[in-house]
Image (cartoon, rainbow, N blue to C red; front, side):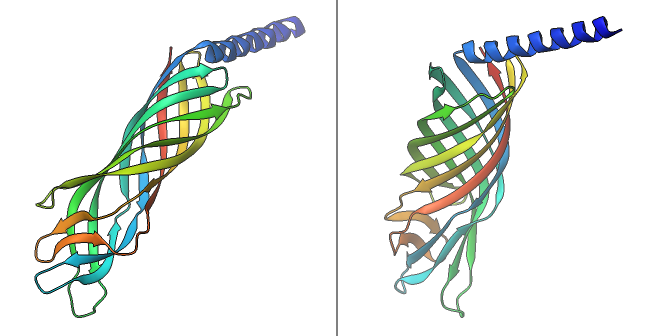
Length: 212
C-alpha cells in the first residue's frame, strides 16, 4: 500500500515538473479574455451655437473583451500585442442644473504593444508589464470617431492547467492622453477637453490561453 502511494506521488511530482518545464520552453501564448471595464471621466466644454457648455463626460461600467498575443523574448519575459474593446454608454452632464444631460452609445478600444516580466512558482506565474499604443473612441450614433495615444499598466497571474493551456487573471489601467474634439452629441455639439487631464479607466478580466 505504501509503495503504491509513493509511486503515485512520484508520478504526480514528475508530471508537475514536466508541465512547469514545458511552460518555460514555449515561445508563444494566445489568450482570449473577457471581464469588466470601469471608470473614465473628463471635465469638458461643449462647442455649441449658444457658446461653450461646461460639464463632465463619463463612460458607464460594462463588459470588456479582447485578446493577447505574446512572444517570449527571454526566460522570464514576453513582448505582447493586446486588444481590448468595451461597448458602453457615454454621458455628458452639463454643470448648469437647468440643462439636460445627453448620452450616446459607443465603443472604446485599446490596441497596444508592450512587455512584461514574470516569475514562475510552481503552477502559478505572476507578472507585471507596461504597454503603449492607441485608444479608439467611436460613437454608434452620429458622433464619428477619434484616435488618441494611450499607455497602460498591467499585471496578473497565470495558472498552469496543462502543459499547453493556462488560465489568466489580469488587471489593466489604460491611460489616454486626450486633446481637442473627442465626442459629438446631437443637440449640444462636440466635446472639447477643457482641463488637459488624462482619460483613465480600469479593467479586470479572466482569460484562457494556449502555449506553443
